[in-house]
Image 1 (spheres, rainbow, N blue to C red):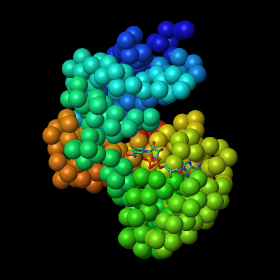
Image 2: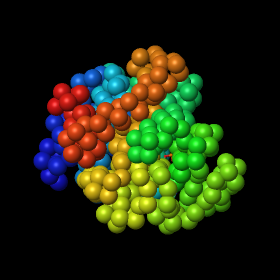
Image 3: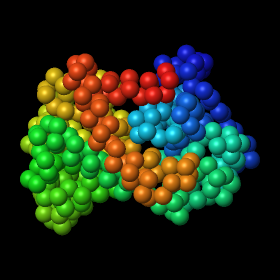
Image 4: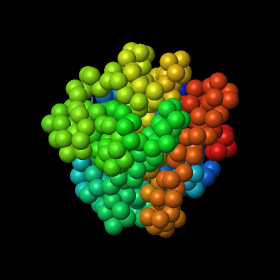
Length: 343
Ligand code: NAD
């Protein structure tokens, strides 16, 4: 194994904590990228990695991403991420969660965790029995999905305004890929505003039922990419924007909640080349992480929603700078985030 600081994903991370608990079989990594703006906040992922190095790379890459996201959301929080290395059967035990929570607690609040892929709300409750440094618990508002959806809705409106000059969403055609917690919530907000919805989900029946309920239409998961629309909103998978998919798009703007939409990190330039406005994913989808304010600032819904209301303004800053400097929006957002975290 190579030393982690020679990894391309190493970015002067402040701390990389390896956790091993023989009794429970826990192996975990807690990566703290930056605490420049406050405690490092970011979820815990429970995942099986074929190669152990991949777990370290994920922790390094995702924690840096959280620094950027939290900084651009204006949160008094730095960036961190934890990875619990699952076995092939992905078996998880209460003892394992207790050992992990102890490790989080020993960091004394330098890292605040939340739910991510492979962890359930019940798992987060189990962690909270051992440590206070847990966000997104049921008695703190629970599922961050609706907050994320609201931020994306505001961002889609900002994108429609910038790309089409639309002052409201009436008749604006929005194609939504993935109508789960975030995409489904977005669809409801947009339907209430009179937008024209085109929905797709691998669960085709769900997309069709939602289209019927909200008065839109549904298409196959293959067709959604090239559907003629004003805004394409990816709310399912990461790495959805590739050279091939960007060439297929038939929209004026891409604005959605899926994490890590740019397959190699530079497809935002391809969007610029095609005259398509891009809302950087981690700027528009920060609504969920903003709820961490409940834990780090004892904030209530009013303060949280006020912070989510600022997402369109942040997108406008990115787009203004992008236009001024002829730099793709994703690269502009990264540069702004790095400045905010003192890098
Ligand atoms: P979810 O599991 O509730 O919904 C995802 C939906 O996408 C499901 O309905 C699934 O069937 C569908 N889907 C999967 N593959 C698809 C495909 N190829 N084509 C079309 N649909 C497909 O998840 P979610 O919480 O709504 O999250 C959606 C995205 O937003 C993810 O990328 C997630 O990382 C990101 N995100 C979520 C939050 C949050 O608060 N939930 C916050 C930030 C980012």
